[in-house]
Length: 205
Image (cartoon, rainbow, N blue to C red; front, side, top):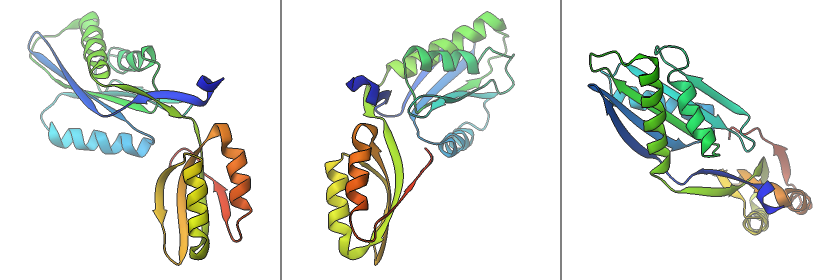
């Protein structure tokens, strides 16, 4: 079935805000592909909001969504990261990060109040942007000599591949994701081109 070859993620980054008894909760949602991006987004938000009390987050990664994490960042256990991840999962998304920045308003909200706040603002952020379907990809590093570049690029375009990195000089290097549904066919065709070397990559490219 066609659906087996696709996954759902966010079309773009978005934000939302929720307030309760003086506390402000700012949710930031991002389409991401790697754990490295998670760290980069967190660092950016900590610079942007240096006076915030908490930077709670959750993410789910991978075509099959098997890589995930939920972090309460000092809030009572299970009151922040888990509700955030729950909203990602309710929407059926992967390759998504949601960070909620909290400014403490002086009044304790209690466990139910915290769960509600993190859940609500995460849901608002995820609902504020379009959800798109993407092909599940097999990722590869392809190396080849410059004279065969046009052949390689033609096949990658035909296969609807995503180019993640490329260095096209005398000796060329491309990191690409080829839709799983026809990766085998195009890998065979690419490997028939003289001097082409193909190495499988993990999700982090």
